[in-house]
Length: 108
Image (cartoon, rainbow, N blue to C red; front, side, top):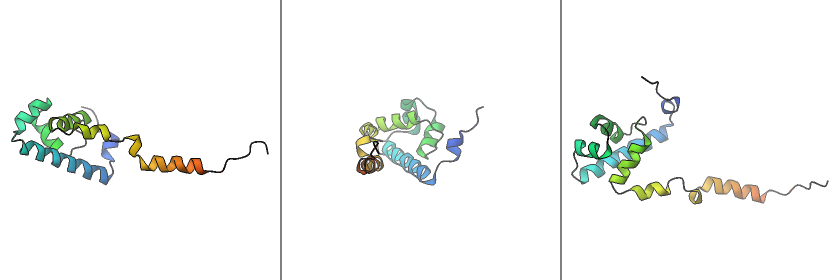
């Protein structure tokens, strides 16, 4: 049996909270579609316990399982917009600061 990833063991609380919320949203999506745990797990190609862990926001469940659940619920378009460089305000602000820096004279 493999050891748990150190990255999973040290996730920031905000990340854990976001995963719990995502799992809850996916659970709600499943229930609103009147899908049983077994049927949804079959469609995801995972076990019922794995689906239950995903719906609780378990960070050890693979990203592909979360992504496929989003697709099953019709939310795959949202995946396309995650981490879109055009919406990366921190990086854009950083790039603007670099552009505004005074140029150094190399022929001094």
